[in-house]
Image 1 (cartoon, rainbow, N blue to C red):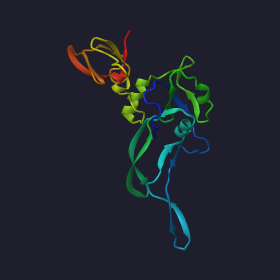
Image 2: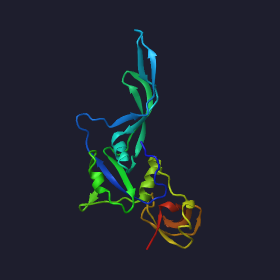
Image 3: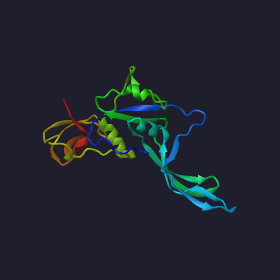
Image 4: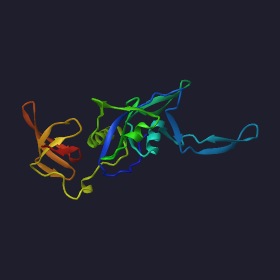
Length: 216
């Protein structure tokens, strides 16, 4: 239930999008790339059937948004469920982690709200004070890391020069330490070290540069 990477290291604007409720029993999922085989039935007729295990199950609203040219991230959780109420066997199935919501993004600076709201699967966008709330690229990358997602995170080699150096004051944009500021002790590859006070003691922490921004 995740998109193929099309943007590389491009900075993105992301928004939490609320989906319209299903109407008249409309389908939320479908299968793509199903393989079929032909066999001879008991009556001698040739019959076509789906090859068991073939095809990829996709979330229909996610597919609609992708075909419209948007980047889509649908956090999913995987659960073991019985194949049917008549059989004890279970299979691992994916389902949306936030029912009725997903994240939609496009390259920073583009104006695409009119295109987004024109799609019949979209009910609205999370906002405050009548304005859509932009979600930082760092937060979405962090969620992709946690829930799974195919958009590649930026590597240190994707930039011409190191983003930070020892002595820089930075702010954490995503993760357990989100919002906290640190002075970096040193920088190695895509990581950085800093010190924070925890329960009256100085504790060294390791930070990932992709989730840091320069603090003012």
